[in-house]
Length: 254
Image (tube, rainbow, N blue to C red; front, side, top):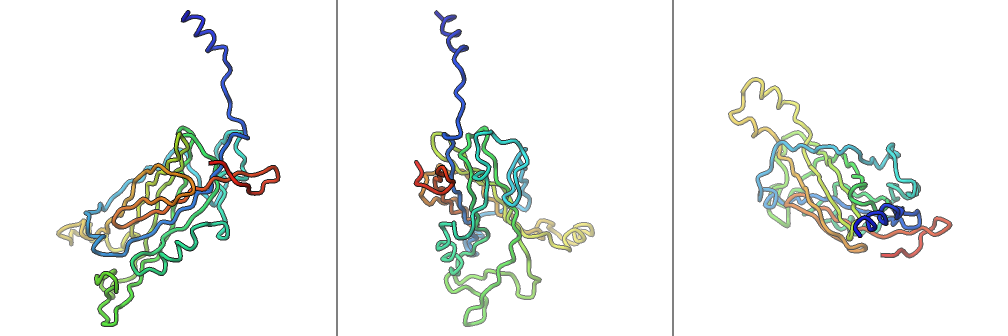
């Protein structure tokens, strides 16, 4: 009996996914910074974070060089969406107008739903100008909403920052979104020389903290979801997209 069952399984052809069965999604995210010093100091942040690059990943500003399954339509595979096609523009404007937050990145692209074994991370590497403190009426450099300073001594040279990492959408029984992001200041030009001459009692005191967010979240399409820590927040919206025979957008299945 067991041998008959095994033979039947071996003779059963594997079910291939056809191009018509591939699900496509518009993925949009806003990465924003919480400017509150009270929240920023709520945790002790590392000064060294290693972001291990995956074997394969996608750069949104260039074609993916690796192999893709034949059933994926390259017109809808990791293609950036224009500003006019983005759905979170009003949310981004609200964050920009807030004195408590500022937008670090606003990205949107179209991609197929990919199983965990195939799902490709999207690489994020964005330079971010340092925030400029807005002085209060008293000129103390305090924010109106938190009453706390949001920058160092005004005499310090402006610091630039960098948002780096990877995000990935996985299609299993549910949608899952994964983020591994680090927000760090660009290296100070004088840190190495100070370390070499032992001029610092505590070398790590001269190093800027790295705000690291590494989270995953189960998603529901067409609903706004959030991942966050005291400094970084990520708003994510995943919307089904289904092209018709002419390539235009039609109502998509969930």
